[in-house]
Length: 298
Image (cartoon, rainbow, N blue to C red):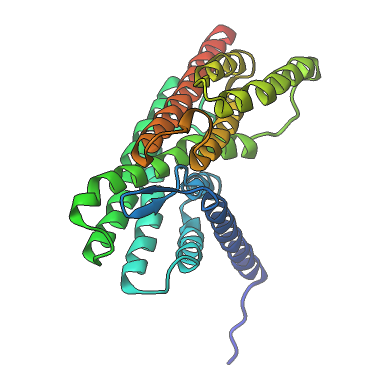
């Protein structure tokens, strides 16, 4: 006797399959994009910003926990494009999958809101979603390098720190931008377009100058972040921080601008401190401003 599958169930299965493949494709594309810029610390190569962690966490909040196979599939193809399939590679894939899932579960536990409209949401994303959860992927990844003999024990901590910060930066810079995009139901107020255009032109002029000048003018970016947060809240500050971080990463990997004549370790420290401070400033300042606006409306 033949089994008949009901149409709604089959439709849900097809939709789920497409969602899984879409998450895997986005994860893989973000991974290939992140691999375009790399730094060397010790005997290991790492990416200063690892966008797939941000993509994975955003996908979990948009689609739910059921999209984790798509994350694992995307991580599988990224790792497979870098190294042949071995047992250690499977452990790396597991670490890259478990880390964003744990971040999602912890953030859900504390009542995280994807609109980042409260200061507690920004703090939770920083300390739980980025700093705490990404300990898993960095520890598993670098631990496997040591166990397989590809990295000496004396190089564990520098590589571990670089891996951890790169994964955390992916959450802090990419996840808010994707969550913001997923909740953008209406265009911005036309009356603010002129100011947005002025901010855009100023960012396009100041940020490349600050990231390419050897006079170390990176501090010029912070007034832009404050302006963007005050006037456009999360949308302005996060996009401004992401743009600045990308250009700073390009300058660091090229060894130009404020990163010229520095050792590899000094480049890593300077870049990650800059990216981290920008991400914290944009997230927390925007959250405070949005919370104050909501209180005034109430």
